[in-house]
Image (cartoon, rainbow, N blue to C red; front, top):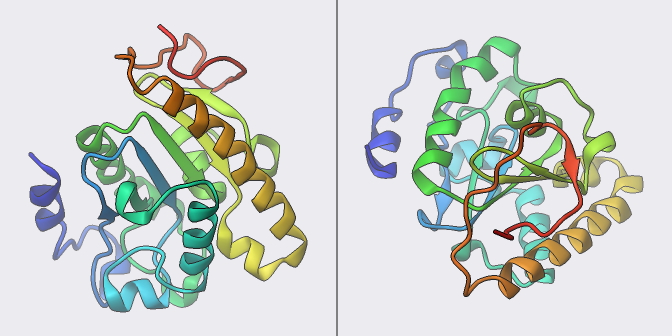
Length: 209
């Protein structure tokens, strides 16, 4: 299966209650061969209307922050844990996360990013596979069996809580350090990162052999 086939298979997904209220499935967008992937929570109003993740106010802020660290949206891939908009942008229910999680993991397997940036609590908890607050782990590097995870605050949270805007910029400043190291090692052929304790943060070169 390739990314297009997976997206097509979910076009009329009816596996959870969110299918009843959505306009369309918001699968993901960007470079299907990206080395960097961003994962958010769920589509909002504008995403549901356009079928593209992060196109509302939070998306505009994300685009600005990406550009501040030298990234274009066309270079990366963006997806959400949940593929359909929850009513009134409420938090996803646990059963909805469990229903959609396999599709996100398939996306990651097909894209094969070196670095996955989780935005907010739900994406971080889903990918770390444990209950953890984003404020406790933001800006830390986690080596998982198939990729490196870098949690950040969610842009929507920073828009709703002004006191989070400075910490969000700080997260992206730390991300730039990670990206600079990736670029320095771009000519090397790195092994996939591994760790006997994948849920523990590490401080080391990301893609050293």
